[in-house]
Image 1: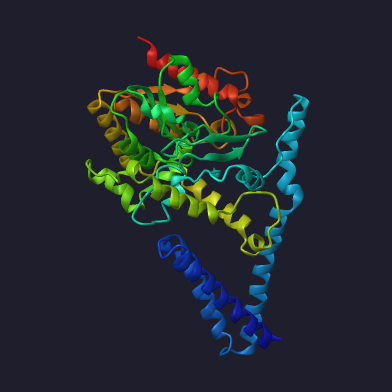
Image 2: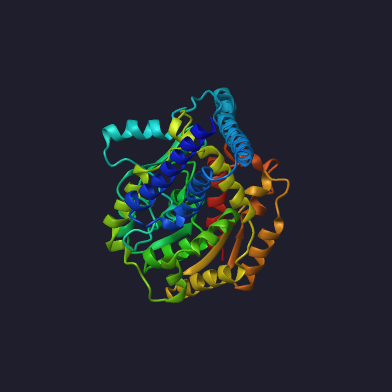
Length: 432
């Protein structure tokens, strides 16, 4: 039995190492070694351990076998639980019930299903590809700051319907004609909130500001952006004639800064004020990399997938989320201050007003929310003499701020939430 186990363990270990080599060196052509480094280490340890089984005594092999079997069994039992239909669908079922009370139909399709359906009619259909995702995937020396251009882009479903938009010539969520405007009233930079996550036009911030001002608005916001990606977007796509630059910030941007500082390309935006990737003229390369990521994308849907189960995707996701939560603090205040200072100087050089908008997020759902993050950022922005637009003050006036989130659950804002944010931005940036 132990001989059979030795052979099986060795075979699996070698196959795992071969798979990591294939993904890292063939699929990503060596451009993602940093991402696969931990998997290299794990697979090499397993190969070494399995090979040593042929040379150690039977008693020790027995103990190792029992420990190994116990660990693997526990991992797959937990993975099975995370894939169990009740655990997967409970949240969706609650949302469907709430939606039915309002006489509406909740779209129960997965991202994979709607992607496959829409692609039949429009070959240019894509899904959002966060620039933070491509920080780990260095390809042809380019760091994208947006997604696929001129594409019907699928984001996600938080409000009972899918957030889908037609991307512009540079892969952002704007009507393409805005780039032909002689003057821009508002230029937004930020993460998923500036992107418009969870709502469709005309309910996103950029669309509402167009309505309020009757002038041109461009958003450079994109999902999962952190401060450095946002600053890089301003440098690459900033408009000459912009009256107001609006930095839309949420405290969940903080973890991203640590990842961004690992990017050699992004660091150049801090080190050299003349550095540029000339991304406006390299959109084909951006599209190519984004499509490659989409092709290899692990769609977050509710269908059971044996390969994903064997790869422990759900557990790995839980570990990653916990790792992000551990980094949920302003561990790089000096870098954050440097980024905001540079953005402010950029605005001044461009004769643009610079406003910083703070969006509340975790505090209404997390009893352990550390308000020091909010207070630290607020102090930094005010010390830099930047206009601080505090949406906390707006939401705190509500009887129940959770009413401004989809189904009163942790996530982005619903239509009412975005409307209050947009209105406050407009009022605070036009008051004399």
